[in-house]
Length: 366
Image 1 (cartoon, rainbow, N blue to C red):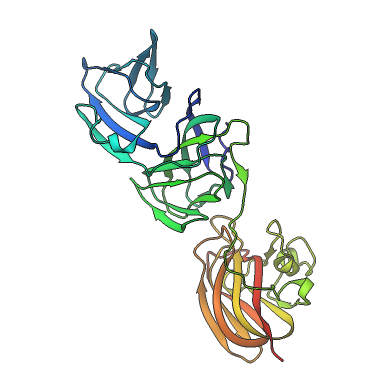
Image 2: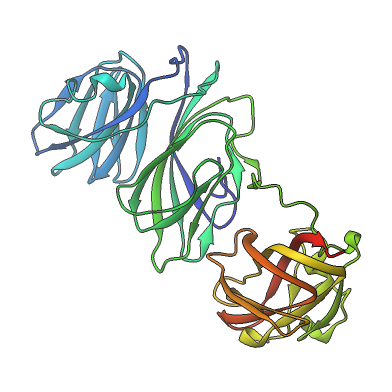
C-alpha cells in the first residue's frame, strides 16, 4: 500500500496489517483503550485481536520473545490470545490498543489504569476472508481523497484538524478531533480538507484481500431529476462565454463545450476571468426549469467558484447559489421558465474560473 492508496492528494501510511485466520462475525466493534506507563512500569496481558498505536513517545512491545520498539505514531498488530508486554523505552509512554471485540464488554473489560477512548458501532459486512488493516491518513489543506469504496467495512477516527467527510449513506458532515465514523463495504466515501491545517485521521479496515483495497466510485443521487436538458444530446448549445482558456474556441481542450459534455474528466476554464466569468446556455426549447446542477473547477488555491447566479433571457435573476466544494456537482431546486440561461460567477478564488459540468432539468413548455 503506497502513499496514494486512497487517491487524490491524501498521504496514506500503512501502520499494520494482518490476515485473520478466524474472522469475527458481524456485530463486533472496534474498542480503543488508552494507557500511560511511567518509566519502569509495564503491562502484560492477552485479549482479542487488536492493533497497537504508539500515541506518544517510544513504546516497547514484546511477544513470542520478539521485542519491538515502536516510534511515536507507529503501529503493530496483535493476534487474538497472544500474551504480550507493553513498556516504555526510555521515558513515559502513552499507547492505544484498538481491540476487535463484543461492544457489550467495552466498559467491563477496560484494563486497570486505562481509559476508554471510543466504542464503534457494530461492524457489519465482514468478508469471509479478512485482511485487518490499520492506516494513518494525512490530507493537506485544499486536499482530498478520491471518491472510492472498500471491499469491507471501514472505521475512521479524527486525530487532529478538521475534514469534510462524505459517504453515500449520510451525505456530508464536518469532522473534528475525536470524531468517529464507520461504513459497511462498497459504500462510496470521500474525505476533503477545505481548512487551513492538515486533517489527520486513523482508519481501520476489515477487507477482502483478494479484491483491490480501494476502487474508484461516485456519489449517485437518489433523486430522479429526469433528462438533463443542458446536454448537447438534448439539443442545448453554448451561446456565449466570458472567455476560454488560451483564448481558444468552444471546442478546445478548455472550451465552454466541455461543461456540457457529461464527462467529469473535462472542464471549461475561463482565461483568468475570476468573479467575472460567465457562460450562457441556449436550451433546445423554452423550459420550466425545476433544478440546476453546477460543478466548479478548481486549481486548489485558485479557479474555484464559491457562488453563482443565473440570469434568464427574460432578465430574471436567481441566486446566488453557494457551492460548498469542488469535489462533485451540486444541485439546486428552482421554479422558473426560460430558454437561455446565463451562469455568472458571484464569488470565487480568482484566476481561471470555470465549470466541470453544468446541468439543467425541467419540462418543455407547451
